[in-house]
Image (cartoon, rainbow, N blue to C red; front, side):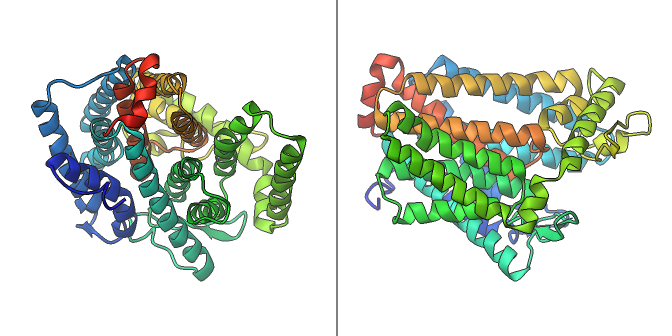
Length: 435
């Protein structure tokens, strides 16, 4: 690995900076923040420097392989950056705050997407990327588990507020981030990359990578988000279950897997906090009421929306919805409906388009996967993409910078992979691409 990371050019330095961003961001996120609220953060400086290299590389390197699916993703991402930025700039109240949200949650992830597309394309690159994301997930897990065990929190240092869940009488862990939702989704993306790294390396259950995956799964468990639990299961099924089904495993293997899932599920249900979360029907009713309220707020300003981060202040008695005696919450709890309410049709369409073209990109990688290694990459992308979609449909994840940045990194890597594959019959060459 040391030999693989030798720096011979500015491109090698940029690739190393891209790999180092995840672990370094986890460590520095609560601490390297200047100003109140923070104006200078590690991510803004580090990803900004990577962005300067991206601009230089785009100008200096005129000829490179490109795939139509990857070009569509970049075009949709840039369109979303523009429309979100314009709506943020035109939001009358607290304009500087919403511009910061736009820069952190939209611009920086797109910069990582562009950089990953330029820098990643070979299986050697993917192994290094997945290794870096596994390390990121390990650090996130250790911080979250330590918070859970020792009762401290870093949300305040990161500009957030600790989330006390009165239903389970616990403060939800948020790792180094400002919110538990951001922490859960970031862990899920790293978990998908870690499992893919495990498949690519061919390691057993007693390996270091397997231990990291177990840590990540434990940390996902203590977020107490049912959507995160479901997403983790989906990731496991896609990366381990589908290859087994296609390989027609022996019945004993299937029985062992089912028994293992049953043991884990039984152990979780024995926890009072977990059983409370699983049996909380009011939470589901509250979600339905909130989604109804989202649509009512959208109806008050359907073209341009009520303004970025103005959903709560735009709710009134007229927009409130009650389902089974449960009132709507003061948070949209759905990234798509939140965008529809706050930015209207004009802001929603680019994000919906971006969702579609990203899925087309992942589908194109899956179709082009003629080698086993590329199949594992395609399964990782599918699992991470579904996990992002599940959490986005049940939580308001769009303003979340770290998880968006991690997803942007994976999507950009997929675009770079597809660029270098070219067509399906050229896929076999990818294992020999030097990057």
